[in-house]
Length: 491
Ligand code: ADP
Figure 1 (spheres, helix red, strand yellow):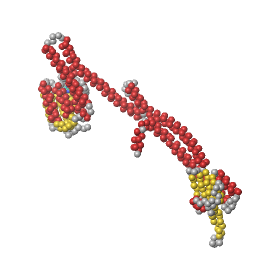
Figure 2: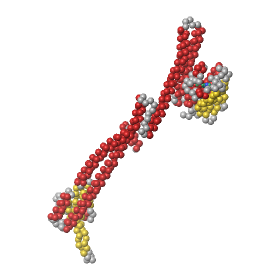
Figure 3: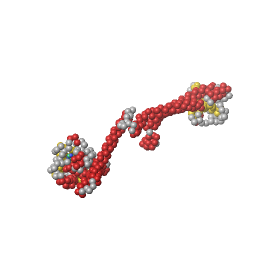
Figure 4: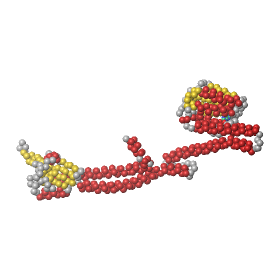
C-alpha cells in the first residue's frame, strides 16, 4: 500500500522536486494542527452549550411541574398564572410546551394545535414510569424532554397508618430550539476559518522561504558546475554550505580531476600517435625527394632507397597494428574470449614462432615447464602479451645471449617468467616502461623495430586476466619479467 502510494507520487513530476516536497511538508505540518484544534474546540463548545441548555430547561421544567401540582392544573387548566408561565417558558426557549394527563390526553399546548388530542409515545410512557427522557435532534436543531408531574397522595396502609406516595399524574413535554447555539457555532466557525486562512497564507509564505533556503545550496552546486562547464573556473567547485553539498562538491572535484587527467593523457596519446606515424612518413618523403631531385640516378641507388622506403612502410604498418591491438585491449572485458587453454603448448608455440628472430640475432631461447598447466585465459590476448615479452628479451639482448622462459603454477595461479641476459633497464626507467610510446633508448629501439607500445599492450592484456606483471633488472646483466595469472578466470 505504502509502496503503491510512493510509486504513484513519484510519477507526479513536480513532486520529484526536493523544494516542492519540503514546501508541502511544512505547509501540512503547519496547517493541519489548526484544523484539528478548530474541530476540537468547536465540538467541545457544542457539547457544553447543549448540555447547559438541557439542564437549564430541565430545572425550569421541574419548577413548572411543581407549580402545576400546586395549582392543580391537571384538573383545571384555566389558571392564568400557570398559562402565563407556560407561555413565558415556550417563548424564552423558543420552543413548545405540552402537558399530557394520565389518560395521554393533551390538556395544554402552547402552540394550541394538539389540545384534546391523545398522545402516546415511548418517551411519555417511560416518563409515567418515573423515567426522565431527553433527546437532542442535531439535524432539526431541537431538544425534546419529558418531565413527570408528580403528586403526593396520602394513603392508609393495611396497618391503618397514613403514608404519602408519589404518583405521576401527568407529563410535561418540552421541546426547545437549539438554533441560537448553532448560530454561535457558525459565527465561531467563520472566525476560526478566517484566522486559519490567514495562518495558512502565512505558513505558505514561510514554507516557500524555508524550502528555498534549504534547497539553495543544491542549486548552488548546479550553478557552480554550470560555471565550470562555461569555463569560468578552471579547476574545482566549492559549496561548503552543508556537509552534504561539501561532500558532493568534493566527489565532483575528484571525478573532474580524473577526467582532466584522462583528457590530458588522451591529448598526449594523440600527439604521440601522430608523431610516431609521421616519422616513417617523413623518412619516406626525404628518400623519395632525394631520388626525384637527382637526375640520372643509378639503378642501384634507386634500389637501395626503395628498400629503405619499404622498411619505413613496414614500420608504419607495425605501429598501426600495435595501436589496433592496444585499442582492442582497452575495450571492455566482454571482449575477452575465455577458454580452458593448455599453457605449455601455448608457450611452445610462441617460442617456435620467435625462434627464427632469435637465431638471426644469435640468441639462445629455452623453455622450462615445471608442471603441465591449463588455465582459463583468452588465448589470443595472452599470446600477444607473452610474445611481446619474449620478443623484447630477444631484441634488447647481446650477441650470444640467452632468453629463458619458465612456467610454473600453484593451486591458484600460474606464473611465466621471462628472463634474459640483455642490456637491462635503468632504475629510473622502470616506472615508465609500461607507458605508451615510452622507450629507454629511442633511437636504439627504433633501430630494432620497437614502437614503444609492446609493454603497454602486455600489461593491459594481463590486467584483463586479473593478473599482475613485475619486472626486475640490472643494467648490463639482464632483465626478468614475472607474470602471474589466476588459473580460473574471475569476472
Ligand atoms: P618497444 O616496442 O620499444 O620494445 P616496449 O613497450 O615493448 O616498446 O618496451 C618499452 C621499452 O622498455 C623498450 O623501448 C626498452 O627500452 C625497454 N625494454 C623492454 N623490455 C626490455 C628488456 N627485456 N630488456 C631491456 N629493455 C627492455
